Image (cartoon, rainbow, N blue to C red; front, side, top):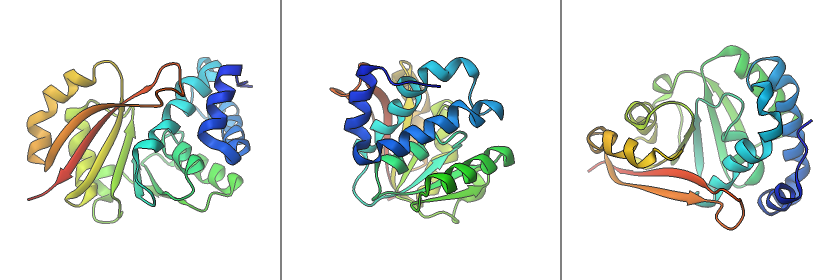
Length: 212
C-alpha cells in the first residue's frame, strides 16, 4: 500500500482538507486495481502520493472557482480525479479513449461517490463541440506541439490549457509557439503550483486562448 510520509501527510491535509479520506481511497484504487489493470506501473506505488496525486492536485490552485474542466487522456484519473476530489466546486469531464481505462474510471468515481465528474469515452478531437469547458488539463499525453491541437479546440475559442510538464517546458513552448498562435493562443507561460506545499512544486504550462 502507498503510505503517506510525514511530509506528504502535511501536504495532503493542506490540499484535500476534509476530503483527505476520499483521496486516500482513490490512492488505494491506484495501488490495487490500477496496477492489476495496467493503468499504473507497480514501481510507482511508493511514489503515488508525491509524484502523482499531490503533484496533480496542486494544479487546482490555478483554476478559477466553479470552472468546467476537461481532462484529456485521463488514464488513471491524473489529474482529473485529483482535481475533482480537491475541489467540489469544479465540474470535471474526463476524456479517455481506451475502454478498459474508462471502465476503471467509472468504477472509481462510483465508489468515491463523486458527483462532479462525468466520463466521456472518446479521443480529444472527437469530443470537440460535445464537451463544454473553460479549462483543459493534460498530463503525460504528448509534447506541447502535438498536445495543443488536441486540447485547445475543446475550449471553443476562449479559455485556457493547463499542461503539467517537466524541466523541458520552456523548450516545448518554443517549439510549439507557431501552432499555439494559430490556434488562438494569446499568452503562454510556465507556472509552478504547490510552492510552499510540496518539496518539488509542479511545473505547469498555461496557454490562454482567445480567438479574435
